[in-house]
Image 1: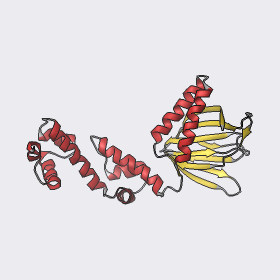
Image 2 (image 1 turned 90 degrees about the horizontal axis):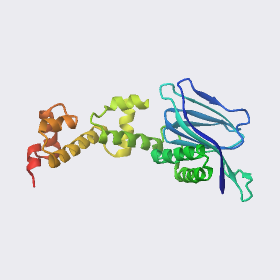
Image 3 (image 1 turned 45 degrees about the vertical axis):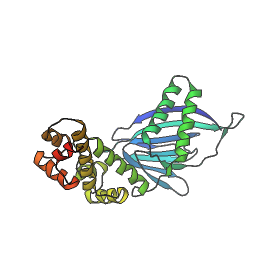
Image 4 (image 1 turned 30 degrees about the vertical axis):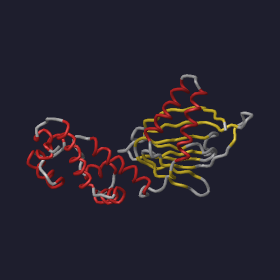
Length: 258
């Protein structure tokens, strides 16, 4: 199928934002993808459907349906949208798709596809923009269905974000800080992290710190006190004790090991 883009853009929504379409909706399709924030989108059909939206949520909004959306003011949405038509061989709009919602696992890849779509369309390169939109729609179709906020697909995304930050940040946020960021209780975030990663938050954090320490011990001449600071331990004594408990030997012995 061919594609024709009508408009596209990036919406960095203010805290007071909400969205209500005309009663008849809009005449074309809208690929509507969230890259920040939390909220809800409601389709007002005979069977009203409510979607919990968050980073990675992507919806193909079909024509002639009224939509309402709002977000949590403390977690405002950042959305990229593309209004377009599917065309038959004669260039006539066709309507092969119904309303659907997906949870995009690799949101950065999806974001790059959609940003290229927007940039190319605004540069009067619609054919090239449609090529990137087609790739984004393929990514959309390959993704898992978007379900409730407690679903494993949503939590897989959250746990991936948490573990990535643990592995890359010099100062690792506490479980309580992550819980506050995502709007859930500390206990529940810890439970879901353990369920999906197979290891507790504290054990994962410790293993990540020890892994970083091993790399620094093997590949740098940094003093133990510096490595302790770099890996988030209170001091050299705390680091040495934790390292010995995890590895079975002291940091100095590990460094000297062939």
